[in-house]
Length: 378
Image (cartoon, rainbow, N blue to C red; front, side, top):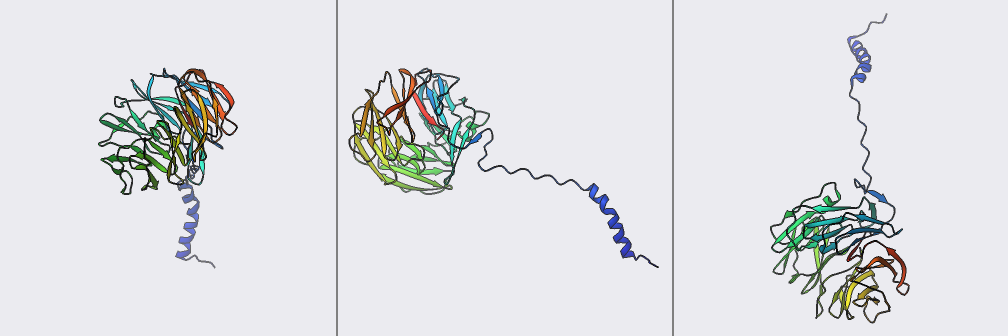
C-alpha cells in the first residue's frame, strides 16, 4: 500500500499551486521597439540629399526653391533683412524687429563614415529676446549653438531646439564668443584662444579674428597670423595654423559642405585656402562681388558687371568666362554639380553647369528677386 511522505505531500501541494501562481503573476511587458539608427522625431529620412535654395528679397519675403523639380514654396515674410547668415539647414535674418530663422526643412547629418539625409516641413521662426542689433551671427551644421554678437553683448542660441516645436530664446554669455564648435564655443581675447564646453589647450595665437567657416576638417578662423583650424574629436580640440600671406584679408570664407578648399574676396582678387595642403593662394581679379567653391579644383567668381569666371583653385588665369545679364546685386552659391546665380533685379535663378563652359542649364522662376541666397540639404 502507498503512503505519501510529508516531503511528497509538500511537493504535490506546490505542483497543484503552480497554475494559480502563474495566473496571479504580473504580465511580462513587451520590450519597446528599438529606435532606429539616425531617427529624428518629426523628420523623414531620405535615401539621398534633397537640395533646396532659401531665397530672401530686399523686403524680407521668403521663398524656398526645390532644386530637383523647380517647385517653389513661399514662407511667411518679415521685416527687411539688415544681416544674413546660413548653415546647411537654417538661414538667419537680422532685422529691426529681431532675429528670424528660416528652417529650410532639408539637411544632411554627417556621421563620418556615412551620412543620413532628412526632410521636414519648412517654416519661419521668430526668436524672442535677441539683443538689439546689428547682429553678427555664427552658426554651423553639427554645432550645438548659434552665436549672436552685438555691440557689447553676446548671446547663445540652442541650435538643436530650432528644429523643435517651440522657438528657443537666447541666453547671455559672460564673455565674448567667436564661433560654435561641436558641443562648445570658441572664445578669443587679446589673441588668446580658449574653449568652453570642450577639452584641449590651444597654444596658437589669433589676433584680430575675422571670417570664420565650419568645415569637415574643423572650424576655420581667419587671424592676422593666418588661418587657425580647430578640430573637435569627441570633445577634445586640437589646432593647426596655416601662415598668412602678405596683403589684404578675406571678408568671408566660402566653401561647399564637407569641402577642403575655401575662398573669399579681397580688393583686387580672391584668396584661396587649401586645407588639404595647408596653404593660402591668391588669384588676382578685379571687381569680384561673389565667390563660390563647387569642388576642390574650381573657384567661381562673379564680378560687378556680371561676368562669371571659372578659375583653377591652384591659381592662374580664368579657365573660362561668360557674361551674364545681371540687373541688380548678384549672389552666387554652388554644389558639386551646379552653380546658382540670384539677382536682386530679376525674379529668377540661373542654374549654371560649371563643367560645361558655364552654360545656363535652367532658368528657374521663383516669384521674388533675391538679395540673399543659401543652399541647404547637402
